[in-house]
Image (cartoon, rainbow, N blue to C red; front, side):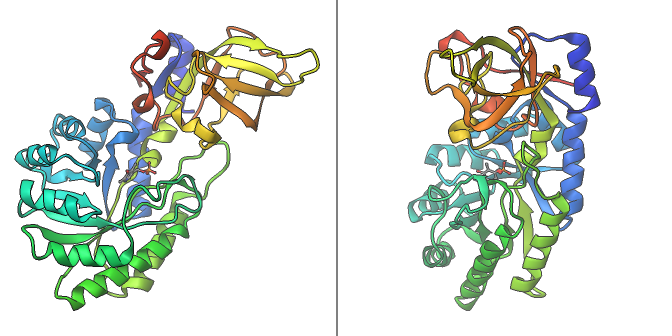
Length: 375
Ligand SMILES: *Cc1c(COP(=O)(O)O)cnc(C)c1O
């Protein structure tokens, strides 16, 4: 919660639910990451919060951008940032979209399969390509394993094959999983990447870029290590595994950049007791899984939720307002709210600037997509 957001909520009393983003906090997060991993080029993962206001602040600070679709590419270009600051980092792209990105000047593409490499060579000839490798996702609250990447022998084969096509084999990428609580999780992937660099070099293929992905956390209900601990662990791994031949490094932060910069304000719509002897009250909010809190799936991402009242904390089940029984936010995670909580009360869902507006449905049950105010 920042002073500016607090002031906005107190003075403007916006209709709920809404997200309030503090753009100065986004800029602070950018500077903090810059200081923690000074050697790395920063490619903001647009999907975390694609608001033009957020992209504009980051573009002004000199950030580059990791994009997943043509629309995201166009949103970045609309800030005035050039195509040379864009990575088309989705490993799953239509050939027509690759061609359109190439036409807009994008020259950096991710792949993790032979057929994708073929599409890039055809539609974006001469571009730099990087191969994504698997990680376990261990230690992450929102893992990204299995669907993306390939194993090391496959990556070796594809990078060497890339050299024989009309593309430049540029490097290796990985993602250790989002909201990664363990700074040591980068080490194994950096070691694997270093192995790939050596193997490729033996085959005459010189790689020059290592993309260590996102995963840097934001403080949620549980504390996380400071950003400095991540930077130090990564720097140590780079030295241990690459020696004095450390390649160009890039990072793709999403959550770290915008999570702590946003607060969702929501209203209590209903408080219910399901049976006389049930101690756990159900608290229904005006936002749920379909209104922007998709990452509460399996209660994975646990936001701090704050009430202005100070009655004794009592266990609650938290749920959204839609007519879908999947729209339960927290049932097992032991959330507690004051016993004097009342219908009509406002609650703050903190550290909610990432993966909320971009995950809100267009109007399930007629509820509006999550609105953002910028301060
Ligand atoms: C989503 C994503 C990111 C951002 O991840 P965070 O955990 O939010 O930092 C970075 N890179 C890629 C390829 C992604 O898909």
